[in-house]
Length: 337
Image (cartoon, rainbow, N blue to C red; front, side, top):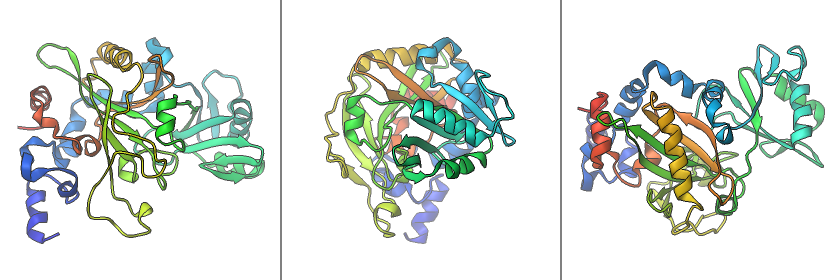
């Protein structure tokens, strides 16, 4: 990229990647939430209340009134000890042994950091006839216990089985829906700013993150219909060769499943239930919810929530600030001028 172009992007608050992701020439830079505004200013929207979203254990307790939608947490790993949520084991028990015993009972578990996002350092654990899997790699019982015992400030939680439509998109990962909700500063009404269906792909590991080579398909907020999916160029998929252009997919490049036109089952029920939860927690005016749909009747689990959600996977489908409600929200909180 020419230095002049890079400097122009930097002056407008964008990294060089934005030129590939966004249609800046047609829409203009003012239509998009910039990287600067997202990273530096948007974290101030929820201010001190952000901790309830950034800390997954606090988020679990935040959903006490919405137990049907929260993921069960079995225990916390800290200081070389395990602290079961239900006090079913002594804190002095070996974390590795406790996790193995819990895995033997449950069959699958998710072990992830208490804080942080982006799917980093997530362990998907399964027990199979061959041994104990961590992100697909098989270990003996003693190896598994050793690897688990070294973890600090991690949560051990249930693995959520996704419903058929999501599994068919790409069966090797849990394919989450990201929904960003905002509270209108004037009316206190909660609204959905944007929603996308995320999908994993070969090379993304156990997660579906867009920046790791996953796919992002727009969701029609009214109907729950998926649009064409964007796929972020990533070295893991190109054998070390970084692609220059964003890829657009009507079908999944690895599973072959149809994407464009797929309808999320019982979307109306999912949307309305989520808006009710966001309204109950409206002292958190800005939330990026990660959802796994668990059946065709509108049931879902809230995997986690984000206090200043990433916008690349959203704005690749269109600029956020083209919606006047969204623009007004960001202006009210001083994110944009």
